[in-house]
Image (cartoon, rainbow over the protein chains, first blue to last red):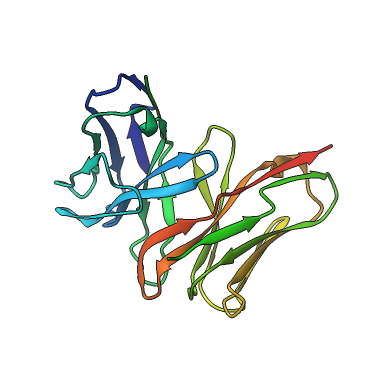
Length: 114
Length: 113
């Protein structure tokens, strides 16, 4: 499918487990982003990547790890999940023009940490 | 640190009425974006505003940007139920470096028949 996809769409895990959320885009956008959405906080940037093998921290990176070995994939790993990481996670990618930072979002992954 | 504030946070309005959502931000930026989110769904890009005085319209929605006042507005004309959703504004985090968007907390719009 064209566009940006995330998997799984829903995930329940336990405290202390490692979890990886996947993100795949077919547009060949160089920039990709991970956000979490929580009530009262809007969307907060976790990590972003400017290109393969280039990543940088956002507002709330603690407890998360990212990698970008291929342009189209940008997985997010929770190394040891905590209850505070229960959230909806959105992946996004950006149009390639320098004038605008219009970002296109995936469908989201709802993660529950018990 | 860039902060983005939206108001109101919740808006209940009747069909056919007009209303405006406000987005204020705290530091200089000349790029602002509006998104729509339906319940349980992803974010959909509505408008991209790239300069002072920019105005964009799509159907019953019109967005404008005043970079001097650090203010964007999303005006709703003759609201219909289908416009019920949460609306977010987002601002580029650093002037000239378009890597990060800072989002407002969103405005939940409920249009009542």
